[in-house]
Image (cartoon, rainbow, N blue to C red; front, side, top):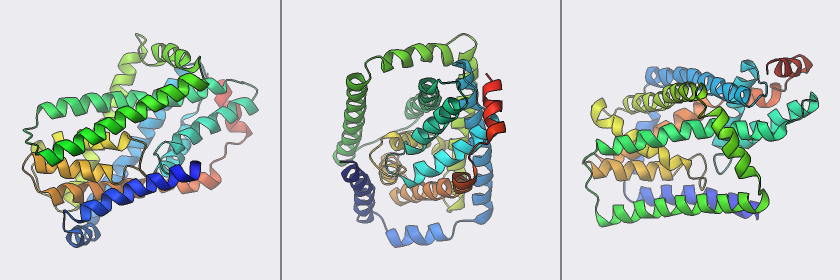
Length: 313
């Protein structure tokens, strides 16, 4: 069943990209991708380093609110590894599963024994960023003059329906297999996200991290030669990135490009430019995740690191 799921997710990404090839000039898009300007790409990759460090710090802070330790060094290593695995494996969440499992293993091997909290810390850290991204997407829509045709509306309805269906299945599965898990997540959410002292920290850190995603997307647009004014381009980004949250593809490929094409066309911009920028963004994110390969083989924490994790509560 797992193998079938993997092939289905690869199939969704490949199928949507193939469908887009009949709508846009794929040869032109590929040639413009290969001609990306190096200085812009380098700037985007450097910003991604700050993005990972910020995300790792947010994870460390969330874990500390739940009473478990995590050093910033280890958090950065694990976040790079998770980002790389999310790019390589279907669903876009296996890297986060990996860092939750690895952190749990460290806690257990150190005798601290709170693996459940390590898992919930990862869930809440991701949730913190996704809530801010969703709010940003909603606000962005308010600044767009959208004119959808029937085909576009069909695609949007399909994507929303799939999102609701996927979330419903996940909630039902959690409720059936882990009756108390949802309650624990809600309890820890109040502690790590919405407590009086935690909320401003989560809001500020997640806002800065989400801003880095938007900035990188804008930089990629310039890297591939799209000169759309920033004020016109910026509101399109968050709605496109929201499509990547659906765990039915590989690293968002396909859905991200389809969403970009729809939105660019809906506001009167060139559909090919939307698909091009989205594909360029995917390439830059993949390049930015490559340090995860190093941490995959050389990032195992030693005894000193385990001791630091426990002392860092």
